[in-house]
Amino acid sequence: NAGVTQTPKFQVLKTGQSMTLQCAQDMNHEYMSWYRQDPGMGLRLIHYSVGAGITDQGEVPNGYNVSRSTTEDFPLRLLSAAPSQTSVYFCASSYSLQGNQPQHFGDGTRLSIL
Amino acid sequence: SQELEQSPQSLIVQEGKNLTINCTSSKTLYGLYWYKQKYGEGLIFLMMLQKGGEEKSHEKITAKLDEKKQQSSLHITASQPSHAGIYLCGAHRGGSNYKLTFGKGTLLTVNP
Image 1: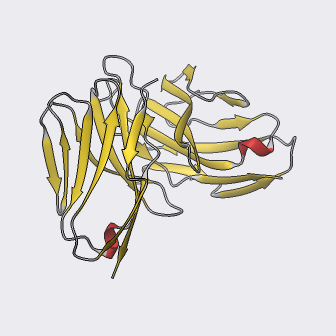
Image 2: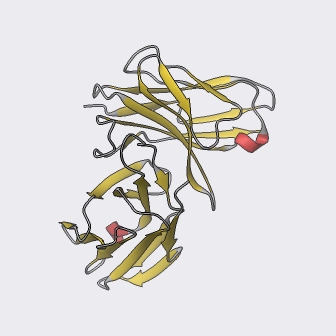
């Protein structure tokens, strides 16, 4: 069982470049979300989705876009990378929409913006 | 947003010692989750607490949610080097608001 798979694991970008962070889960989970983890800031929610075709903003959505065309995939797009977006990004998914099931996390993507 | 305060921020203990990590909220916790993260890796789910006074254990780790549902503690008995890592608490508001808010984490070091 693969769980939540994130690619790439590491990435270095130049300011202004765009890229997509991939996230896929094979557990048929309806709920998926993206977090960023920064020193001293903890995990902060960027965007989330409660099902295919439905997305919403989290705490820090600026500079990021998401889409959910299938239940399995939830890519995160950086439109024009900025140094402030240097971070570790985590994708998570869960079965229940009522918050009584744990979220399963991927191993993260470590992103550096030069 | 629901703020979660974790204490201590970091902790160094000798192998075999007991320790406690706290997670405090300014609002009622409808669901409290404990995760462990090793450096450079993802988050591993440990336990979930929902009811006031609830207590759960897994191996040498015990988590409790107080009666008022505003504070949770994570207790490790007879710590081992394998317990080292970052412990994070996360919570949601309940109902249909399922977005998780996380504390900033507690870095645990266990010296052999």
